Image (cartoon, rainbow, N blue to C red; front, top):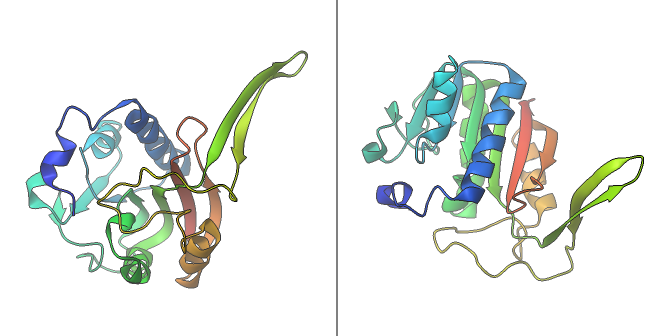
Length: 203
């Protein structure tokens, strides 16, 4: 598991991290529900921003040194059933062995009564394209190449990542649905395709 000093180093909050923060925050604001549970406080940027906007956010993390509101594990969340309208869990679940993924999802399913937003690393190769078309404007998107080998720079703290052998996106989404979630949307930000966002509704 990542050491708490990992989040305070000068290299952690880089340009791509802030792009991910924007999408993490935007997903919460778009759903317009509260209270919100954030699993994995990280640097605290997202929860602090949301709290500053008057949103009721409770943070939980296994590392007490990060000073979450509640110390606990995603494997056994210390909250009542359906205690939150929205649960967000960003860049956390890949730090657990995949055989613990279903149990973690089941706990997340238990404590939400409406929505969940997840983000996880996606190692599938994707190339960005952007060009201007007269009379239409700017067209941009991601060209996904699933037949190309996934990127090789995998974080050593990750047990798995979407796109690596045995962990294709289709498998991950199927396993999520088995827990009882309805998939509302999944996407990879144009600016940072290394993170995949998954928006879910409790079934």
